[in-house]
Image 1: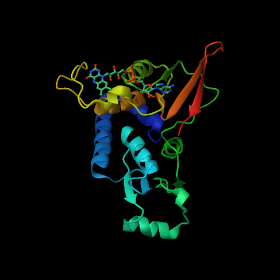
Image 2: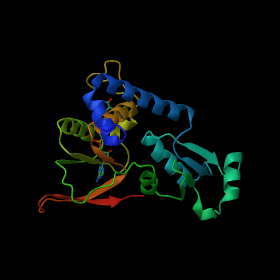
Image 3: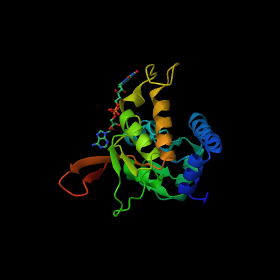
Image 4: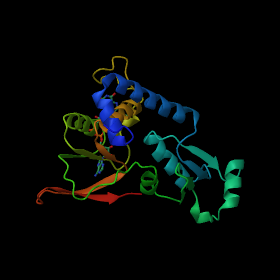
Length: 224
Ligand SMILES: Cc1cc2nc3c(=O)[nH]c(=O)nc-3n(C[C@H](O)[C@H](O)[C@H](O)COP(=O)(O)OP(=O)(O)OC[C@H]3O[C@@H](n4cnc5c(N)ncnc54)[C@H](O)[C@@H]3O)c2cc1C
């Protein structure tokens, strides 16, 4: 088993339950700390009140992705970066991705692609199950199917968690006697589905299901 690739690490997490639990716990705690204290992830540079900036921040927040937002006019780090690159008014918000690339006024899909949130799809691969919507129902389907060894893909046009993602506290979900926030529930289910190898693509909207084709086809639309 090769542990240096994402697939190898996922196989290890499933095969070695005790070790897998520790690694998963460490990764989740690391992500939570990055979100709470800032740091890690992309750096957004713009004006805090502009719709484009608010839109990108909202997208990253809904998707539980750590990021840092810097004001282009007042933050010294942002100002010194802007002195080194050519940027016009239309380029804002600017996003510096963890791989060093710079996106100029990207839409949500472009940002997600740069962050690796949209998997590369092999056009010749036929999935056993394609789930449209990463709400509680979709993520549960993905976890059960992928854990049984089926090849699974999940699409959502917005964020994992669906309506439940907006709930401050869910009291009636099986297994959580003290309640759990919708965001935490969605985050756990998302990671669980990924652990079993589901290919999750967000944001991608499904435009149509072509049932007459064999195999059936989903028609996708990249959204802003
Ligand atoms: C504020 C709030 C609090 C709630 N609290 C509770 C509670 O305490 N207890 C309880 O039992 N229920 C609660 N609910 C209801 C619960 O959240 C829903 O019943 C549950 O989310 C339904 O899950 P679902 O997966 O079927 O659909 P949804 O949660 O609606 O998820 C559907 C997903 O599909 C995606 N989608 C839709 N169309 C497409 C498309 N064409 N392409 C790609 N993606 C698409 C959407 O973006 C969405 O993420 C609450 C709801 C809200 C809004």
